[in-house]
Image 1: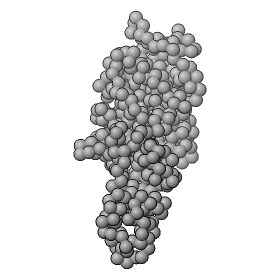
Image 2 (image 1 turned 90 degrees about the vertical axis):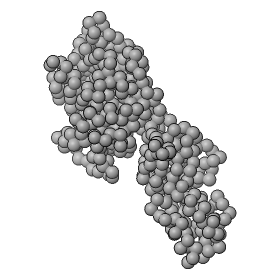
Image 3 (image 1 turned 120 degrees about the horizontal axis):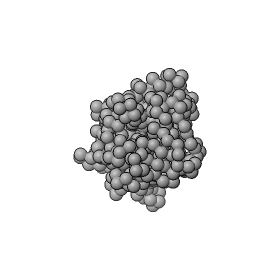
Image 4 (image 1 turned 30 degrees about the vertical axis):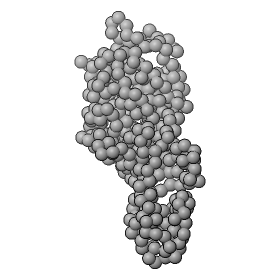
Length: 406
């Protein structure tokens, strides 16, 4: 039976990075993955350019950009391996990148460059990789080490790292393996649900807006009340089935079924004042005046909903114009659901942080570690989830190497 210092299950961003760092720190590391391809989520992320980190992360206030039942859990790892650290690694490998907006960093050429970096780091650490190689069973032997039955035979190790991600995008191989392992060893999990996901609306209620599919515009979007209220200023995209775009992906992580979202469709405009001015000076139809303030397709869809808005603006009552302004600046609607895991970029929830060390990612089950998306730590859209992958992987790899030398 082959024996390793550490076995990493999952060849995604967190798993490969952890393996590479641990290998370079002198450990004999094996990576197992049931899929033939490595880092498929990296490959398709950021429109194929991988939004690999975000400069705006503030490790002293992780709750600003991360969701978790304990947002402070991620502070330790994020403060010890920062965006600047990963940027330095990118530069070492000669990978050029650019900032889009709000601190979001993307590869200039392709996400393939980032995958090549991860594989090169593994190679530098002498990491062995078995792919495709499914895991059949994981158990603890009499001496406290782990034995893993794989499709290529049984292997053993003192330390096992679960880096299998969440349930998002099953077509690229996502499974519930990590949650099953947590359950097998009596570790609690936080109920997983889709995050960073488009929201859907039922046919009839959505009919007036279905024709807007493909339209994109900047909005202010919010959900929740008082203490739970969350808002984002981002772009909204209308789809055949509902709403998407960065604004909706961001708010979806905070939205709960049965609750409404509120959208200001013209956040840069004082609508009551603009409509009052137009009423005093113009004889055009309301739709034509409105089209100067919001996209014309949106203006047409909006006025079609009320007879009082289908007339020259000079003939409209103040009440009708006030109603129009209110409706556009505070459009309240309740999604019937989301596009689910097939379109979700991440999985909220996961292995309960109360079961893990924030310093090392070790669980209460000796020798068993959890890193990346499988843990109940989920970032905003914009490179935050990759930074959590790098930081949690690095914390784990350092801990593994220190344990070996201890």
